[in-house]
Length: 391
Image (cartoon, rainbow, N blue to C red; front, side):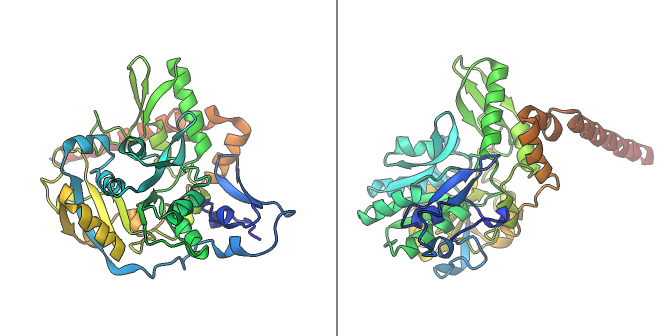
């Protein structure tokens, strides 16, 4: 029977819930909205499947991986498609091919009022909701069982998610002896997953400031700011767009990540998916003209023979250049994001003092941030003064 005594050991992938033969496991949110399994001991038959299926450990399945991943810098040939996507629109190309085969797409979209959750799509219009980065851990709900059902019906399926989610899905399907020959899996190079309740409260905070509900959100708006920028935007019914960076700032502080993110086993080039996608930082080393317009460029890692065949099907729709691991190396391909030293205190303060308090203490709205910025400006001014004096 699975029991989570250390939150760093659970990524919330739901594989344990999905495999339970008596439906004894429920995914329960903690104070920040992260889901953890809770076992109903009255229903549990001690079969041990919930523990066996867990793949959040260093021994996750890698038998299908190529000796080395194939590495590409890539972008869609259509600038219109690139404009709709976070990076180079490679996910759109991959998923379009699956849809043309009559397949099904699973990805992170929105339910309720911009609550991030995995959804099922069978048309390009439905799939379009999965475009773009969503810096919140998605609610998988019953997605693993839905994927299994589609595969049993003979459908082609593309599942996209974080590496812990893709690893969990593959483990669930393996332990349930599900035929995965029609399954294609894509993950992302993940920096860490922020707390659902912080996103919920932040959205409510922005809407209160505006006095109206948002009709669209963008966690990384490149339409006006360019691909390399990272600020969030909110669009309202009157057409007004508000651009902020508070959520982004807090994201990069690593203070609202799930505990398991600092213990991630997938921060390497041996990925638990057929293809890995990410922003290609350092693209200038490959070709300084490829993303000179700052519209977006994708990193593509082809990890398995199936991923290789998949990429071959779609590569004519891309502008792509082969490269190597050294060129595309970024921090989360070599190590997990370090947990902020005040992560525990952050959660306690959120529970006891509320969202407005943590906004002032830990984000960019309070005196601590303003003091930090003042110190940074002072150091910059001193450096410039020294250079002028030396000259």
